[in-house]
Image 1 (cartoon, rainbow, N blue to C red):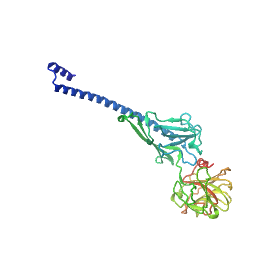
Image 2: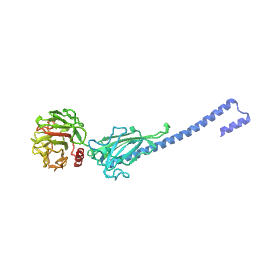
Image 3: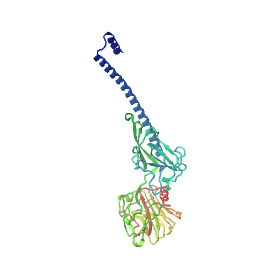
Image 4: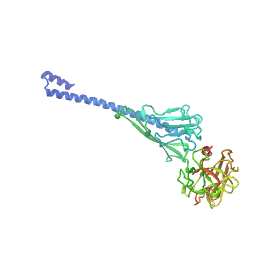
Length: 423
């Protein structure tokens, strides 16, 4: 005000020269511009701060919801012939979780058991419900979708690459699986880049009911050629001798073929002696078989020699047995029900060192569950240096399919899930 008062006094006294007038106008313009820029800066900073707060809040709520769902899920959303319904490499990635009921979910989501998938849809985080779906169903992942819930508001944006899932055991206990989630949320800026905000965070949560599958070898036996046969998990390629017949149809209902082992041709496949095939604790062997004749003791998976190692086989009296050897003697779990030549069977040998027990599950596709063989024993497995052979020394006469080895003792429920992939 003093500045303008002097201008007025000078004007009254003697007026302005042209140069003075230009200088006064320039100074006034500079002051006005400074005031305007100051107000714009304050406004932009406030908008930026507000956008950052809103975006961080959205990210925090969305990530907390994902963590809550993982923590309370009853496991991964699975189906037969497929490891699970998640696809972490897709764009956008998909996480599939299974729930026994709606106790931890909003409204009507899974009913009496079903799955939820979490992914990006239209730049928003979406949870899709799949109600009343048996997790062992062959069509679980293609079941009819139910209610959908959005975990972020329309005020923020999530691109396909802003969400990622991965698995880890770094923070897990007793072998339970952890899911790592990384989420980046951005605010809509309406083309005003200066006030755009992003918020990124990563979390790791353990699935309370989901152990690492422990699958170390999986021979599907569906190759178009007769040798070799490939391990699709652990790389234990097996070289076969004999093996004259290739069947186009699997014993399970999954796609692919099976292998027909002929006793007369001494058919067998040698998978070598890799360290991880020499189990140092509990293990599980799973296989589908259709026996054509019972002439001698027939091995399905054989890594036994000199009372060391393990074996899954069928004896000459048509009874399947699971064998674990301690270097001196071998303990057997034998199924007392004899197998027939007109049915397809799923056999699962489980050695549980913690429970000091060997269990052999046998299930006929038409006969149903057979009496399980159980041997409560303190036998401690001692490994042999011999190779693991499929259709071993005594050979096997019949069809084999889908042979799996796990480095832990599977539960009866997990055996049921594997078996359900067939019938």
